[in-house]
Length: 386
Ligand SMILES: [Zn+2]
Image 1 (cartoon, rainbow, N blue to C red):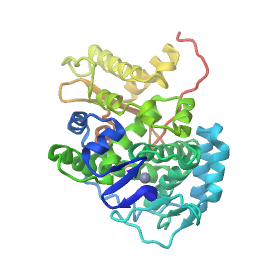
Image 2 (image 1 turned 180 degrees about the vertical axis):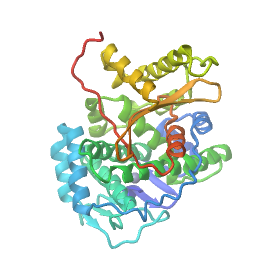
Image 3 (image 1 turned 30 degrees about the vertical axis):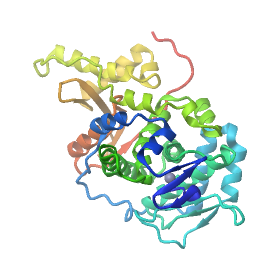
Image 4 (image 1 turned 120 degrees about the vertical axis):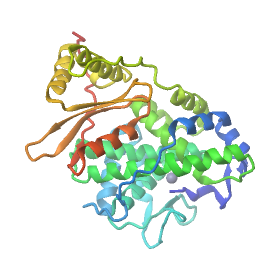
């Protein structure tokens, strides 16, 4: 997934006038305080799930033309101001599928000079190759949106990851049959970026002598893309996409990493008798507080609708509250079950970054049951709070 535009060799990367060869030059370029990395790794390193899901053997129904159309539509829906640039990038870039790619030789986007831009990806319809292609289209679209500016690597990867998130949201709005497979693939990738890649980065920070590795960029970029997609409105994302200067002026990585580590600010839940009225109130209150951590979504519903929604879930026992090690509410999920037994997750609220733990717990709870998740975006029209 490396954009090889500026790659000089395996261990150095040219950014502007400086060359990234050391940890310090990498941290300076992105204005990161190295102690923030250690804190971030302590809070966010993921362990690999034992499931045998393999994105390379999971086949989707999609052709590369389908992926092209879906990704283009997803980007244009989110960034209508950049429709022309997105259109140009999709029409200009040539896809080369005859190069074998792997974890060691990942797919890449190369803007090219005389030959024109290319994306090299080994597309075979697998969930792996779909996400790879979307990722590289994200690099291509960003390259045109920012006027071919030389963007430093963490930020470059943020935009490719944002394209993946936009595609997923678009497939969700279409109720696309491949949505679940691609969601699973992104979860699988999260475990790599926030697992092995984050461990490598934290070890390099502790070592201080390691030479630059491109993989250092992924954990932070992955986390930031999720953060931006959740908290930024589309006009702000547009401003970032088309920005041709140093993105450290607009995005303070340290601030985002510090917020990621500030942890759960909610109070601990008291130990209450099971099935008592008090425990139902505590459960209801915990879900409400988790939803209040988001500015959009359920926290915008009129209070009577919101209360009815949650109390119906409590009655049906179709909700699960995840507590952290100190009994603080960390995340919750709610779902509905169709007559054929398929479970649709209608809400996943994990404002403190416990998304992976929530999904793992749900997976072990539901076993082999087919689970679909729904990400209904909030209605933006104004509503009366009560
Ligand atoms: Zn990339």
